[in-house]
Image (tube, rainbow, N blue to C red; front, side, top):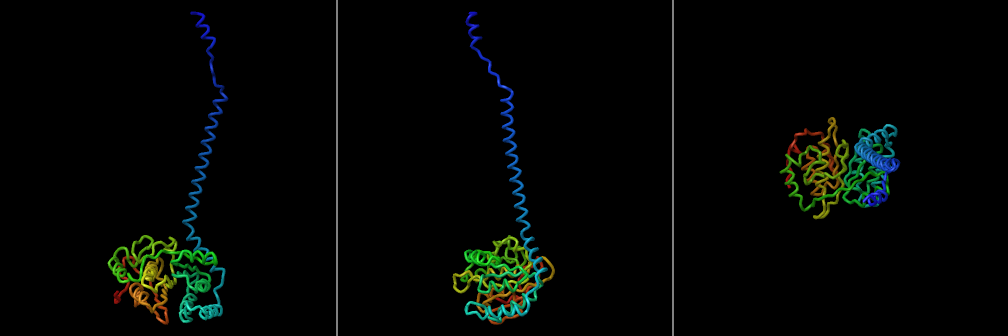
Length: 308
């Protein structure tokens, strides 16, 4: 029995871990935790920086235009006349007439610099509008995303965005009826369209554009010459709301509607821009001047006379 015990004792080996090995495992865990913490902090800092950059983009853009206006003198009358002359005398049959271009040019020239100019439609006059609004901000809205991207690539100074129109000219009467029914709710004349579900309100523009105080708005798009085309009802409605929803002062907004002789443009303008605001109608251009409206207003026009 003793011999068995002794043999057992002789075969038993005591295994001990050296303190260095224990320290090494603990050190590896600490390094792993440190790396994870470092990556977490870096991610949070990146996220915060990105949010701050996005939120300040609109104000920074506005400040840059103001700075440019302070350092760059306005275009001379001679240069403006030359631009208007050569633009209107082009062989392109889709261009505006001299009379129409001059009306818009005169308003831009009188605008307090920097001028915010919103244009619905990328047209043969696109570069002209950008040039005439020399120190201001000119933004173009178009239905064709590929053409908007092409224009920005070819002319980097152009600021253009695409928008999805869901309207059809054949639905004109139905759309006008819907707006009248919802004028107390989603289709109010004073609102932030970014949060609106009105069928004629464009709510998918870049957020910053809803915050700008627009001095001049030109409706020269989208296409509207066949029944299934989007028409300009939504553009006219949006222009009317943006002009009435200004936050600062009693500053007026000039709204121009091109192809004013066509039914959709005429009826939509009577409905949302109103005859009492019509300053001039000559050739193919209607010129309206709209003022800021009370936030609780539920009527576009004082004297509603138009009907679908």
